[in-house]
Image 1 (cartoon, rainbow, N blue to C red):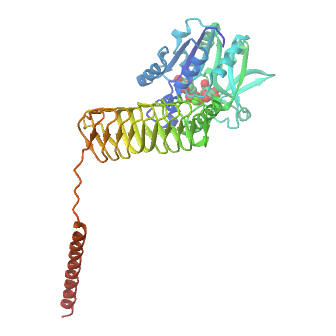
Image 2 (image 1 turned 30 degrees about the vertical axis):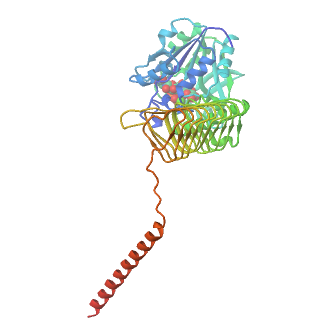
Image 3 (image 1 turned 90 degrees about the vertical axis):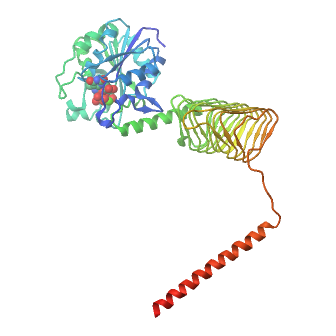
Length: 467
Ligand code: UD1
Ligand code: CA
C-alpha cells in the first residue's frame, strides 16, 4: 500500500429517483451495510487518510449514518444537484488542503475493493495526472463510455450525449477517478455544463486534462466491482454478487458450506475455520462463530456469538445479545435473545430464552419459556450451573435459580430457587381409582340420551309436516 497522502471524495447527494424510495439512494443496503458504508470502508482499507462525503440538503440521517460507520469522515452539503463535478466541488474546503492523491468515488458503486482503489492510486504514483477506472460490460446502457485512441483515454461520453457509434462502445466509466492532487481543484473548476442534461459532469475532466497536455489513463477494473446502482433491480443484482463474494471468502477461509448459494451473509459475518454451515442459513449483522461450530439448516442469526464446537439449529433463531459458550446446543425452534449460555449448556427444543444467563452444563427442557416482559419492563432470569429445567416450565422473571437445581416439568416458577433445591410450581396430581370407567359410562349415556331426544323431535316435525 502506498504511503502518499490521499483525499477521497465520495459523492452521495443524489436522490436516486429511479429507486422510488423515501430513503436517499446510498442509504439502501448491501449485506446489511448502506451502500456508502461499503465505499468508505474500502477507502479506509486502501489507506486513504482523509475521506469526505458529499450529501444533499436535508440528509442529516445520512450524515449521522456516515459518522456512525466512520467517525473521522467529514461531510459536505451540495445545496443543489447540478451534477457530479459540482458535487465534488462541494468538498472544496477539503480540496483546498493539499493531498498527493485525490480520488472521487460514487456512493452508489459499493462493490469496489481496496485493491482496485490501490490500482488507481498506483497509476497516479506512476505519473498519471488523471486516472479513470473503466470496465468492459455487455450491458453498457446508462454508463459513460470511455473513448480511447492509441491506448490513450481521450474523453468520456455520457449515454445521453453519445452518438449511436459511441453507444456501441462497451468500455465504460465506473465513476472512480483519481487526480494528481496539485491538479484536482483546477480541473474540477474548469468543467462547464454544456451538455444535454445541463449538468456539470465530472467526466469532462478527461477532455480538459488532455487539452492541457496532462497524462490521462484508464485503469482496467472488473464489472462485478464497478457496477453502479440506479434501480432496485441493480440493487438486487449487486446484492447477489456481494453474497457470492462473501461465500467464496468463507470457503477460502476454511468453512464448509453445504449449499453455498442458500447461505446469506452480512458484511461483518465472522466465521472461523472449520465452521460448518448447512443449507438455508441467514446471518444478520454482528455474528461471530468460533471454530468447529455447526449451524444447522434453516437457522437465523443476528448479533450473536457462537462458541467453539457448538451446534445451533436446525430451525434456531439467535437474536442480538445471544452469547453461546463452547460446546453448547441450541436446537429446533429455540429462540435466544440477550442471553448467555455457559459452556456445555443446552436448550434443545421449542423454547424462548430471553434476558437470561444459563450456567454451564445446565439443561433447558422442551417448551421452557422465560417470561422476561411484563408489558412495561424487561426482567432477567438467572440459571446456575448443572441445573435441570423440566419441560414446559415457565420462568417468570425476575427470578434466579441456583446451581444444581431441579425444576419439575410444567412448573410456573415465580420465586428464586436456592442451590441444590427441587422446585415444583404446579398443582399436585390427583389419582382416583376406577373413576375413569365410571366417568366414561356416564358420558356415553348422556350422548345417547341427546341423540334420542334429537331423533324424536325430528320424527315429530315430519308428522307435523304431513298433517
Ligand atoms: C455516472 C457517470 C457515468 C458512469 C456512472 C457509473 C457522470 C456525469 N456520469 O453516471 O459516466 O458511467 O456514473 O455508475 O459522472 N451525485 C451527487 N450530486 C449530483 C449528481 C450525482 O452527489 O449532483 C452522486 C449520486 O448520489 C451518485 C453519484 O454521484 O452516488 C453518481 O450519480 P448518478 O446520477 O448515479 O450518475 P450516473 O448517471 O449513474
Ligand atoms: Ca449511478
